Length: 87
Image 1 (cartoon, rainbow, N blue to C red):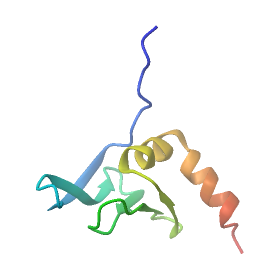
Image 2: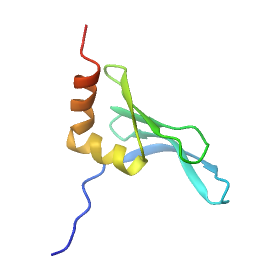
Image 3: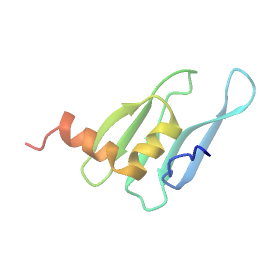
Image 4: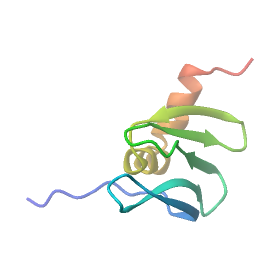
């Protein structure tokens, strides 16, 4: 049985910096449809702040890959609605 990766939200407007290892690290991106923004500090190991642009709600994810998978599946929006209910 082949394990398949979850679908990922396509991203654009990628901003990169060089990490301590010397390899490029992404520290900012936006979904191609403009719904999501992904940002992180340039320090290694920092979480990604994921913002749902239409509502301004945001939360952290441990990696860009997990953030993109969560936004693609709808899990991130569910998390935001659970953790930050509308007032």
